[in-house]
Image (cartoon, rainbow, N blue to C red; front, side):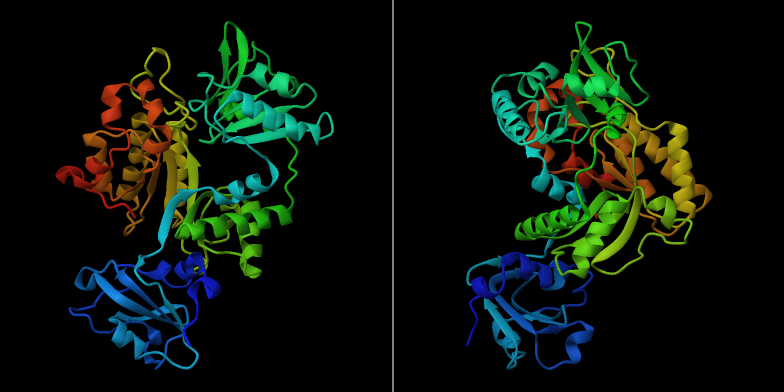
Length: 470
């Protein structure tokens, strides 16, 4: 008797078990017609563990682009083909799922995300993804009423251009809502935060405090606005106690990977994996709570892993060491990325560099020569050029076959940069969602830069700068 797929297998579980491993390489060699194509080591078995039917299955293989059904054995594809051919692989223990008119696709891979932190924040901090300052203040104040005076209140997912008041959140707003607590509200882009006066006092920051290298305390009429960018946030880091336990972090990983799987994401690249995140992923994996495969782009653990001889590729299909991750400039969404021309209306503001040219060259050389992939956050055209300089240099001096070094975000390009990216075999990882979430901010970049921001069509189609993203 055929099982009810809605009762026995969720969409996320189905994608995770099967479609997540589809790829042009995996099904390469399929040839013509609707017949069965046996491909994997599981193909010597006579029956499948699982069969799925749909109106159309997209295989991502040009020779056999679509099918009606697929069969899975031991977590790997056994065959794709017509419904009749695949049903021939059905045995007494085979689970069968008929998805009717549904279209089945390969699982999606998010090539740049920060899920471990996002998961625990959803569980423990204050989500202020709302559309007014008044709502932000009420949400933060509500948490304060449950929290002893003097303890930190943390909000996240604030967006400065989505508020009914038509202005950004500031220090005085938080002072009014939280007079007895130090508080911080993080921007959804992850590079700026707004603090209240109690927080600044604890950090010893005043309007006269100089901006640190690679960071900024924003001021207006000689007073702190509350907005803090990039490395200036570091002065608060030691003051905000971590209230997230190991169990919290593991629960966060469980939650966020379930949500990702429900959306069809079966793998992701954690772009900046901390030691705590590695522990959380490992614990979730051991407990069967990890719903997606993880490619860990290391930050803190890198300094211990590299001397031990570990490099990119270490691990298994569920938890794998990826590259090492660095950040060289600011954010497109928060208007802090480093550019060759200034922001509209701010003639002296070209954005922020968070690494020097020398530092970029040093870290790239060490990682490249140690067999690591390197991923450097670079949004602005100036920063992208600096990162390309370093990648081109190491590949010329110490060539490696296809090191696949990456430019994270790669937001503001031009024809010359695109041509260099292609020639160097560098992988850009731009955000396709940024125009949706942050397009209203582009006015601060001006029309000329807007033409080359997130220029995905140019990236993929220009003959002199074609670059596959993967």
